[in-house]
Length: 337
Image 1 (tube, rainbow, N blue to C red):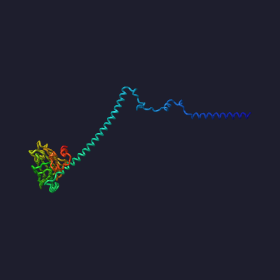
Image 2 (image 1 turned 60 degrees about the vertical axis):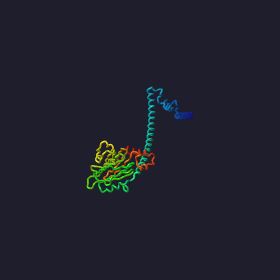
Image 3 (image 1 turned 60 degrees about the horizontal axis):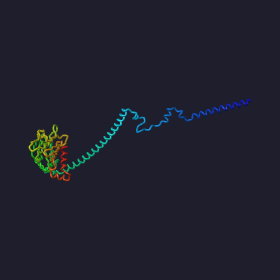
Image 4 (image 1 turned 45 degrees about the horizontal axis):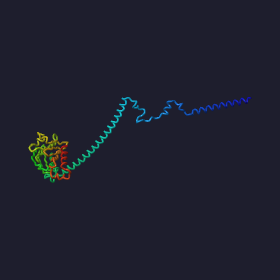
């Protein structure tokens, strides 16, 4: 009987252990089981199943539909779209305009560059037609100036006649100093020189006035190179008048004139050496002067028309296309810029 009780206790213990083991295995399987949609909260399921909404007609679904907009909202929306389109069109038009302007500017620059080269070639051809006259044959303006280099004030220069008419010396007046190489008549297509200097043992420089008659006009020339630059400077003046206008060194230096002053160009040559120039009576004159106590003066006399140029100038320009028109442009660029 005692053994039977022990056996029953062992069987009961074994059953309890087996039941506990089975419950533990069941609990483990229950933890590994996937969560069903029923067990997941509604919000979580919604997020899991949520898919991106495709755009329709280029608009996001979150945007308000036009059918749901008020008239004011719809009008503002369409105005904004129109403004955007206008801004894009205006920007494109501005870019196109900038490109056109840049293209036109490049064309104009290229054209100007070609015209400048042609102008330089044309001017050089005309210059080449002028040959030294009697006063410069075998010498130069620099050599005339060098002869008077021992004097503290000395001037030398030349006059070039591009016209077909001889420039006849009309009158000369020496106010200060003395002329060492006198002014002379200037034949067509020729360059003639002149020179002057201060007088020895004097405190004044060289102040000279001369005039030329050429084909009904009178060309007036005045220059003054002072002994001292303390209160003074080099001055040069040119004028073109009719045959009955009286001028002299004092009147041209002090601009003591009436109506003919508009036909005169006077300048102080100190730091700026741009030329003096004037046109009248079918002629134009351009002249420059140095700024030192030994300046060189360069004077050119041009007819305003090609038919008025010397034969040497016309022969030199004969190979140019339409030389008469080019001469007109040459005079315009030289004197009417």
